Image 1: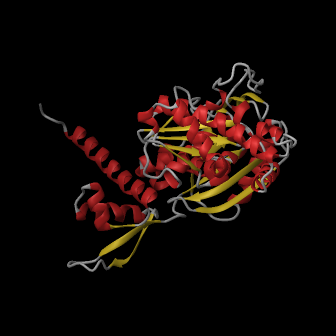
Image 2: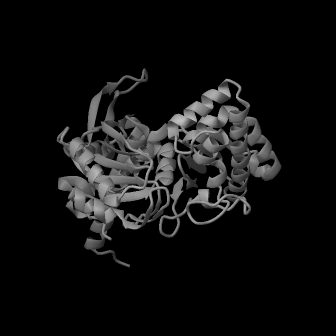
Image 3: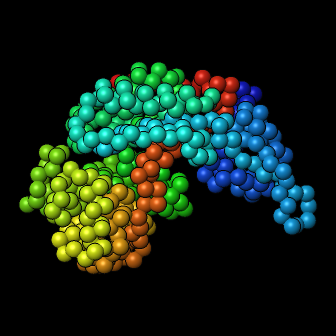
Length: 409
């Protein structure tokens, strides 16, 4: 069969775009690389790498430093690094007790950041969107940024296709078209990508934190609510519409307490922040300050605080054992306060895992605290916003108009 010239041209252009993507993604995820490193990583020739790097440099996405002397024969290889300000994303985060915004540069460097703490109460969507738009305007005014995308992390069940928040019980939201509302308020002609905060935390830890290099990971968030993010075979698993990972609403105790989602005995009601504070005889609305107080009391030997922590450790272990049996992860990452509890609950966790987890899967898994702390969702939201550029850098050349779309309701 003869191949027409148009088809050959199309295939050639597809390969070219894929090669650009391979280079930009590797630099984004691995940091500066020599041209020799890029040749080895991509299998391309030196001349091909030279040409592709030249294209990226012409667009302001990369720079080349002086040659690296490796102490080996031959001509030293120039070091290629991403230009952090060559392309940036705006990231927004909506948690129960704070909102935040950041400008993150290509390569993962946070260039500007602001977080606004707020009372733990149900807030109107209008107020939240207005406050986020004000934070975004402040950050945009701090530099001449080339913004190529917006990433949003929100503490709720989010449809990734358009940013519809189906339910955010701890915010008091039901069926909120957040993506469309933000698109109107921000009025920026770039893609808006939205995700659940736990999914964002998982992606952040996988790309930049405790799970770098690990392809099967469960991230468990644990602020006011409890959520989960799943990395399976190196990919973030979000389900048919982006609702996967709501592990906080697995029923673990049918005779347990009512949950704000409307069910009874959810995992969240046994390991969430509120139950820890209540069992430690603190007001359930004390938030992070209350958690810090409980940790101090436990460190001082308080039986009440230690019993409260042990309760959370027991149910955390029971739930994790179920996840281990179903998902066979290599790594369980505890975000939020639960990560802080690990020094106190390590033995209890091990005991529950030995009791309930299948031996073969149990032997493969480790439980560790999140390394990015409260910023994990912001980091993940930035990574999500960068994905279109990483997948097809050529689409963003000359303004990237071919790749732009706005979220709609």
